[in-house]
Image (cartoon, rainbow, N blue to C red; front, side):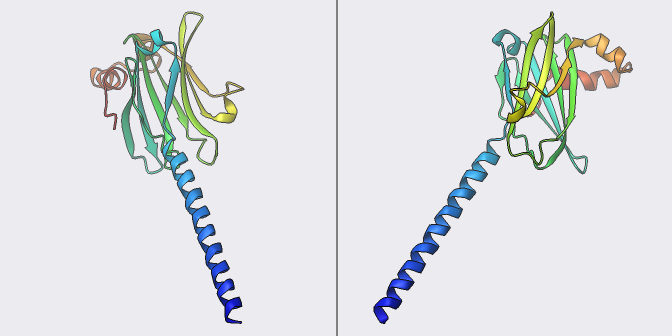
Amino acid sequence: MENLLNQHIKGFSTTIVKVFLQLLLITTVACTKMNEQTFKVFGKEDILKNTKINIIKIDDRGAKTENTLLFLGKEYDINAETEAVATYELYVSYKDSLVNILKFENVMRNANDHINHIYLNEENNSINVIYIGRESDVVKHHGFMKTLMPKNDFYKANNISDDKTIEKYNQLFLMKLSSS
């Protein structure tokens, strides 16, 4: 009887250890995947080396975090913070003369196939910036897109004329921000 009890205790202990190890493995994989949710920039080298991308992440309370994602071909690892961020704003500049802002809500919050890809491409003598947030949208090439325009045209189209506001936008388009 005592031998039978010891076998049950041993079997129960082994089962508990197995379940614990499986939970540990699942948690580690899930956390690793969450930590890998950084933005990735894709495009031809000659476009990337002439492009600057600054990103502003805005949470539900309106708190903003500014980072440089790409600066003249050098890409920085910026966490997408998919669960915390409500809105993203990408300030894109090509050769310091073509600019635009790509703003989009974080519709990827509840998705499980985050990729956070940014594509820069040239089409019909224009530079486009495209954000694709989900792996399932890559095949369809479905995402948010803007075409870059001359900086002065951007300011006119957005009724930006005072020097202080122009300086603010110039900083977001042209300067290297924090990349931590």
